[in-house]
Amino acid sequence: MSMKTSDSQYAECLYFTSSALARKVEKMANECWKQVDLSPSHAYLLMAVLEEPGMQPGNLAEQLQLTPSTITRLIEKLEEKKLVIRTTEGKLTNVYPTPKAKDLQPELRNCVHEFHTKYTSIIGKEESIRFVKTLTKIADKLTD
Image 1 (cartoon, helix red, strand yellow):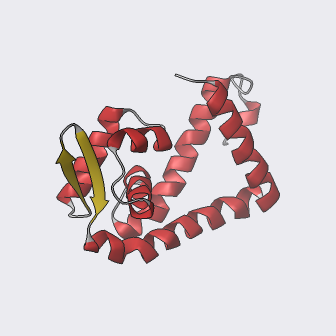
Image 2 (spheres, rainbow, N blue to C red):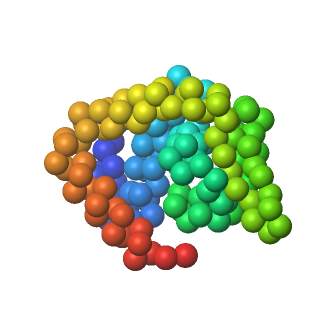
Image 3 (tube, rainbow, N blue to C red):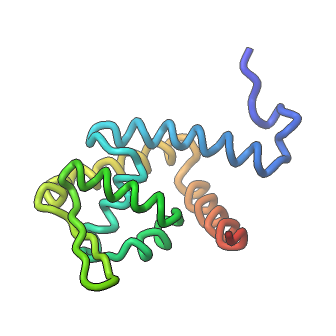
């Protein structure tokens, strides 16, 4: 018999509940992004670079709410896959999408759409919108 999170003694614990949610969302997201052979983190970084070619790693870290070292690892992996290139001018590093990344853009959009459709079909469209807004507000309050 499977126990629901709401039945758990930890149901009112932010850490337990947010971790359980993160694992479930991660699993769902990984399924959607599998078709482009990228993790969700790699895909969202790539989409940010496609939207704004020449982004600096620090801006990517801020936008994606990841540490600079994580951003560096993600960029390195995308470079290995020939999806981004880095240029350095003095102390400034800029990240650009490759033609291969630009060709992948429609598939990336499809993954975003598929992921959104999956979770809104479970949670509901209006609830999804409210929930993401609430999570964003909470994340902004819980600064590092």
